[in-house]
Image (cartoon, rainbow, N blue to C red; front, side, top):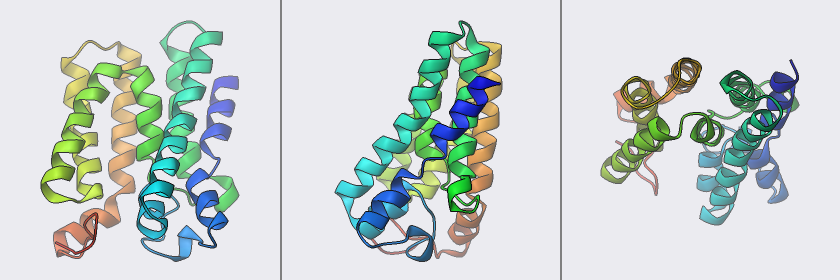
Length: 193
């Protein structure tokens, strides 16, 4: 399907990794070893990290918007959004080893299911402000997305993609969950649990 292919290709562009390389840093071999915006933030500073987050979010949102313009109805948008997240997580340009999918997932899902995503974004901000763990905030937001999409106005297709994306994000944070339980996870700004 065209939506899936375009979404995957857009999602597979490793913006954060490219920004790191432009600064002489390979994100896969420094910091957390992850090719996403959080590692870019930690290794190259807040300006690069913010730009990487914005670009990773856009590559999730734009395919969904394009699919919605070409194929009316929720299915094309859902397929494009999920494909974009998968493209980011499993980018073929970096040996199928991409980022965690949070920024790209946010970009895609804010278009697909805005109210549930906004509510889970509140959870993300609250958890990050309280504990300063990006991973814990991301996991909490993904967990909050599931009841939010059930309780707030949202179609059946949108609910299904919310659940799938939330499960994928949590699965991608398995190593973070292990470090959180051991007290070795790094806080935003330095320090561990």
